[in-house]
Image 1 (cartoon, rainbow, N blue to C red):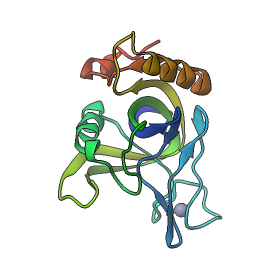
Image 2 (image 1 turned 135 degrees about the vertical axis):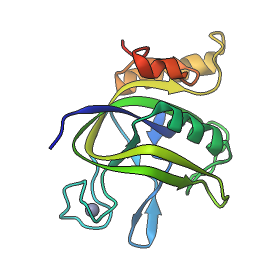
Image 3 (image 1 turned 180 degrees about the vertical axis):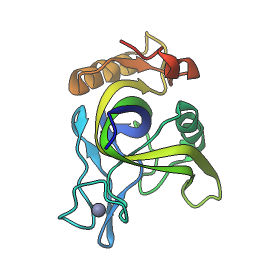
Image 4 (image 1 turned 90 degrees about the vertical axis):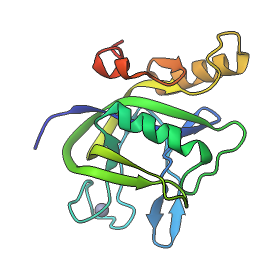
Length: 180
Ligand SMILES: [Zn+2]
């Protein structure tokens, strides 16, 4: 069934809470999914009896194995994505996580952003049974004297109980730079 593996995700952060940028569809209603803590266990938005991930469904917690894909996406979504429009106080957050098996993989998955034709193709996308955040990078306000950024960082750190960095990661973080 595979082993726990490391991967990357991104969210929007509002009031120091992480929200998945891609709403899940429950019936006709699409809802934005809050990540309330470090560990995340997805439920199936369509079939209550599913234990995600299920092959012919969309359930599970998604990630990219390659940080470069997440950073491309982060660049692209500066204009907002899905049901969540960017507004004042919303920050983009990138995270390194470990993902619990079973994991279903797809290759070269295009993700379309909003109503534009822009897409980022994830080289390898995973859909897992669960996730644990290991480290977070919060965009915007890298200046250490920016009191709002400093407060955001300390609140997120206390809330999710992981190391938090101001500014998005560079690719070196993917090769060991993210260790604590
Ligand atoms: Zn399902």
